[in-house]
Image 1 (cartoon, rainbow, N blue to C red):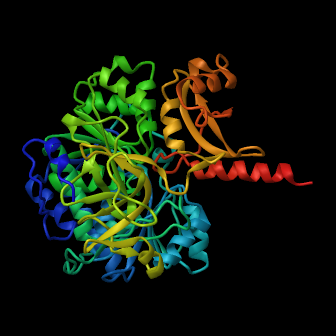
Image 2: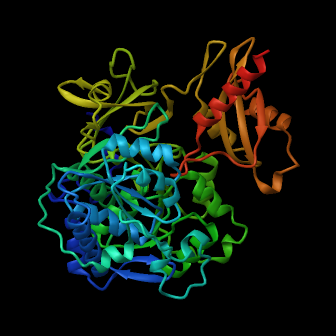
Image 3: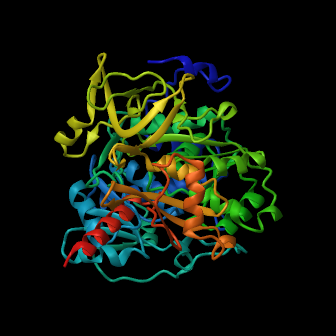
Length: 559
């Protein structure tokens, strides 16, 4: 394990972390006992105290146990946007000694069914705007019990913020015996049995995004989940007085840990946003003196692209952080010019969020950061697994306290992603990267995303980062296109900034790329788009664009 990065370690932070050996639910209980009247959640100007969250989570747990038959270790599906019900439902499932299975809210019926079947789950907590997608599963008996929530139930205070229609929609009644309204589940006022889960019991099972194949359930215990929830707070030195904005979706580990579980552990106030809205976000920052939030680069780009952004008091922001994709250097520079440091981090569903984070005082642009407490990460040759020297590109492998136990019911897949090096069990991330002389890690690309153009290796992420320096480029995604001469060639799909639409041509961007990067890397094709497909967590879905390109090429060749 390298130690050269220790010289950049956050000030006054130890090199070792020993988080509580308790269930995650205990964090909520402690914060509620310490600060019962403090606002745990702010939801369109409605304040929800820690005492209320604790009380309602216990009542949800009682209903799950006594009416839905949930027992210790059962997997329970949670299918909704960021909301009070998500937080209460999440902790209610844990209080019932069960396992949370967070589901991507972009999933349709078949995707939900695949997750439910794989997890072996027959009970779900869902919001009413997605209920139609899972109703066929109730009708077919594949789900036995469903609690359905209306977001509008928690809109108690008047607000001038723009409330999305799906949030303000009134509660809809239902008559099915296997379907219970959220309010009725709370009103039953059923007490749960004792807490029997501990640090090494299953806690949450997020599913991988499927960018490298079929989504797989990642088995995390209370111990692995607790680790990153606590580590991120310690890393940045957050105190209970800080107010945080929750915009990254809770169903994804980035939002779950950085904006929900971590803040609840320390007793922060969390301002909820079920859907990204740059105007509402700016209003909330100003109104609630928000100190920080975690998101993806596209979110921060949009926030500061608001033409009215300078009208808001943003002085309370102490840091912005995120991951999922590299922050373009040009965008990070614009933030620095505002006095805001963007701290990029790196982690996966398999590591329950961060294994690497940039130190706030020594952050590097387009950098994954340095290994955090207890993490041993290396860059190795993907074939021989030999560790590579600084600067050379290889696969990132990671050993640490937050690494998952394995994929749910997939022992062969689990065996393939773990290797032993020097007596330690390392997780193979499938990400290509390099480490510099100071111990900072940098992403190059996914192991399977490389474009082979006439024998030259082109890493799309590198090309995208360079393209973001063009003033007309708002978003860019680089993919491979079939080429009769080169085998593959580089293609870029570009979303132009509004003020540049109609003013810049594909040829001009291609010429700019040729002047600013090696000829073999420069896109040979540029295609403009109104938007790029994104996952529920805000990541650009490069695989979807790549598959469209291959399908179009195949259709063109067909007689």
